[in-house]
Image (cartoon, helix red, strand yellow):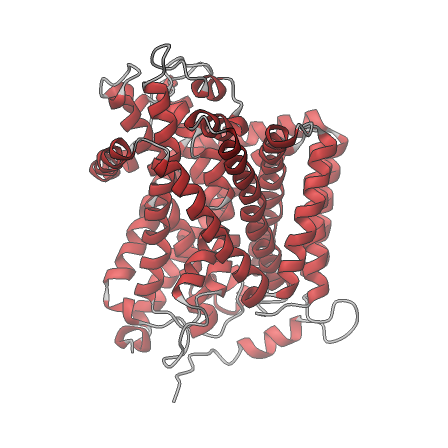
Length: 544
């Protein structure tokens, strides 16, 4: 017999909140209206007063990064340690669901979907440009490119500095970052599938505030999650289509202008919406799996046509450096002006971005993880994507660094470094592919594959984001009404297109990062709540 760990009071409260008929049937009307109004208000403000809005958002973001940088650093450490604890403790045997529950998806499909939702387009965009920026030593923005390398005497453009560049890149995309998604996903899956609370962010606060999660506090938490999801996905779409347009320019001389951006947004949003409407088991799963297959081909190109022996040695050196310095790098809080500027612009920016995306990605990976044990969930969702991400970053970034280290005109003259230095990040990927082989047809094919993957990786982020929004606004329904998946899928595309028209994406990106501050506070409360619940719940102590 399956166990059922359900607070009976949650059933009528949830049922009462969801409309039974009319246009809002299956959704929480008040939350749905409030979320649409919130999105509209921010878009109108940004469109109507672009410069003022940008100044406000940037000022708030700057204040958050300078004032609460240490708070972000400490919070990430706490979350990381908590994830390791629940994975290694006796609580790791607990299933995310009833005791007889088993996973809905195969391990491959599960990993493909969580990797697609959590990383995807970001790795393609930053895998070359970010390590190249840390490798540079010209300080184009008035602060050190890599103060960690400088502090250890690696200030010259050589392999030692390249190792430090990859180490910091791994740090920003590795275990610490993924622990944020894992902690949120764990809380939602545990309270949603084992405790039978709604599959929304508010449920993670139940051990702290009890039934008040159904009141204003719960509404506010879920609205914050909707905000982060809509604007996080929209800004990523807007920035991503710029790189896709750069690829189309290389492939077919298609001008990388606003018309191309809008057409790309329309096509990608349409496909992502159709995928979200078809559900997790069909559209999202299938596209995620094909993303992995096609990515293997692209990774194979970077391995076969790169300096294989050097890359393997470089991987060993950089992983060793990353693990050796993980603790001191995690604890590092800058106090000197130049280092503070760098940490705020990079590490704190990344921590804020991962935290801002945590409600969206965490809820999605919770949605696809029913039936897995806590140990399986935490290990699979934290370590496996980190390993894959490190291999990806090393093959992409490592090739670019090798080309610069061995350039005919001297170190740093291959041209890729100049692209990063001039902040032409979207072109770095194509520039590297072009330098790796003299076979023009292969350069074209790999550039086409990279451009296609940019689109499909983003589709998997967008469709899962659309599904997450509809799930939260339906009070945790695994299969929210399809018409609202369409509404939010279209809305995300429209927001991205409108903001591109007035060059307001950077402003909304700053707003999203600023909004990560309250989410970070909620994250710490969630951490305490799930540990408290696991410790006091007899079924969680014994496991199955």
